[in-house]
Amino acid sequence: MTLVAPPSIPRAAGSVPLLGHAIQLMRDNLGFIASLRTRYGPLVEITLQPGTRTVIVQDPDLIRTMLTDLGPSLDKGRFFEKMGQLLGDSVVTAAGQEHVRKRRQLQPAFGRPEISRYVDIMRGETTAAVDTWAPGRQLDVREAMVKLSLDMLAKTIFSGSLDEVTFRRLREDLSVVMNGVGARVMLPDWVERLPLPFNRRFTTARDAVRATISQAVAELQDSGQDTGDMLSLLLRATDEETGRPLTGHQIASEVLTLAVAGTETTASVLSWALYEITRNADIERTVLDELDTVLEGRPIALEDLPHLPYLDRVIRETLRLHHTGWLVTRRTVTQTRLGPWSLPAGTELAYCQHALHRDPALFPDPLSFNPDRWLEDAQTKAFTPGAYLPFGAGKHKCIGDRFALTELVTAIATIVRRLRFELPPNQTVRPVAQATVRPSTLLMTVHQRNAPAEQEQCSRPVDRPR
Image: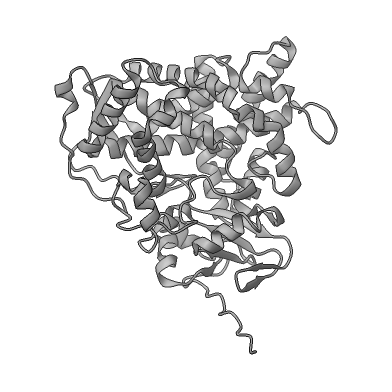
């Protein structure tokens, strides 16, 4: 029997010395990554760093294999390595047994009993945010969602111990850090060592965020109180190898990374969900009818979440069409086989959820926002296994997936029952990828939802997402 060698892995065109494919990524990162799916096969090589091989994995079966079967044997790759260097070691950036150990330490903070307590905080912060949005005026929805997401996360972590001035400063600093992390992953390492204002702003903001978190940790440690929040749970956690509690520095690293990873992603998904609900009157009406039927006028609680299947489908479809992840990395530690290919140690692997979820070969009419594609019969007929990965897969699947879904349902349900939005004419809303895939510009006019007649609105024609 003659063994047939696998085809060689093609290299994407357009690489230049020193910068590799960084110019294409800086010019149009989403367009460049999406183009690889149509021009090349299941694997394609690009250059992010001189002398480093990065292989983009595009086949859903191979992506699944990479995340599940190979997951325990792979390092987490450049993206998470850079996050660790910039923000500190955490469950998000760790790999292998270190990740398993850190995940066990943090898992109680994301269990159902704790999330049940968080719902009241999430709902309260959303209600407070809605109260500040002036009816009749335009709202920068993405900025409002960043503020809301940070408020929800910070209150679950710190139990309201940060004053408003500190919150405002923390939000501003985190925005600089989130944008800076995304840029540093793409650019060669030597760029961040240049004495540029961009680099100075990032370092100053990161140090300020860490100082704010460290101060909150120290104050709670000194008080000896159990405030019942996530920070108290982290203070009670112990290192399973040494039996010692986590240090203030370790806790600060975990909280900082969770804040950067969680705030930006939740804000982007909330923004996209409100955009899609607003631009489609039938979807908005169905969401409102379901909320009216299930909640009967009372505030949403954790027990209501399983009884809101249509809103769940709206969120699923938002996570498909507008996924916030555009380059997730892993790295081979030893010679590794992926499908028929053998990859040497030190090979960077990456996949793009945003491009995967928009592939017409995997999702019929992929640019159409259709919550009913998530009906059970539709999924059985149309879906390719492994093509939908909203929170990743395997041992490194997002630890905060349940927390995030609870945030999304609670916030959307609270907002749309109080307010309706109106898109301005001629506004082009397109995805841009920085730390996450976010709306380029999303302005909407706020209106009180006072009467049934006001709930009827016409969707405005807007450009379809790219």
